[in-house]
Amino acid sequence: MAFTSHSKLPELNTATILLVGMQGIGKHRLAGALLELNTSYSLQVRTATHLPLPAENSESRPRIDFVVFLLDANNNMSISKTVASAKELDVSYFLGRACFVVLNATSESLHCTDMSNITGLCDAHDSPMLCGSLQDENQRKCLARKLLCQTEVSSGFKHAVSPMLIQATKHTYEFMEPL
Image 1 (spheres, one colour):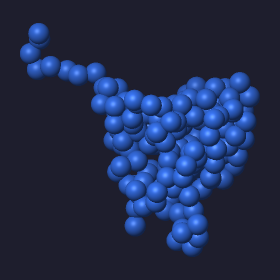
Image 2: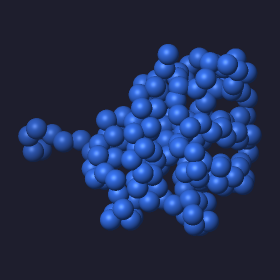
Image 3: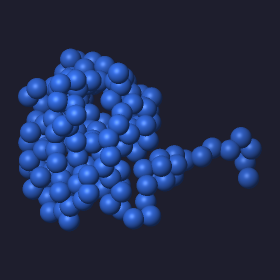
Image 4: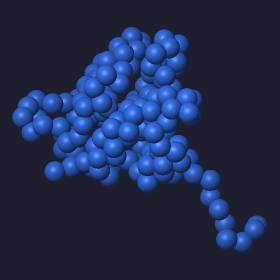
């Protein structure tokens, strides 16, 4: 069964982020950077190596407001696990409630695949792609702030802004005939 966004009611003044990525990729460092940020609400960060999540303890698991797929461009297994995990996520998450974070995107000579394959994955799921490094503290904090902004929208903490609004306005529209 796919992981769904509407299976639980939201908790009051709480946002929950799920970081999905291979072991050793740096999920816990990113989780720490997210939790260090000052918010007016309670922020929970959960981690998983893959989706679907195990069925046990599912009733005590909080509603997940935002899903972050972490993948290492230099690791083929990381890419394939991300592709497999993304297939297990309910399509409603790909409407502004999920994103892909590509690590080591700048070291092109070490990439296991062409970056167009990774951008194709993001395009296929109609989700944003962020590139960054979890090794450098400044980049990690910057990445955490960007993810927190997306989480605030998906959790309803940004009034008058919804994930659907962002989704609808992020594309450039092409017209068949010039105006």
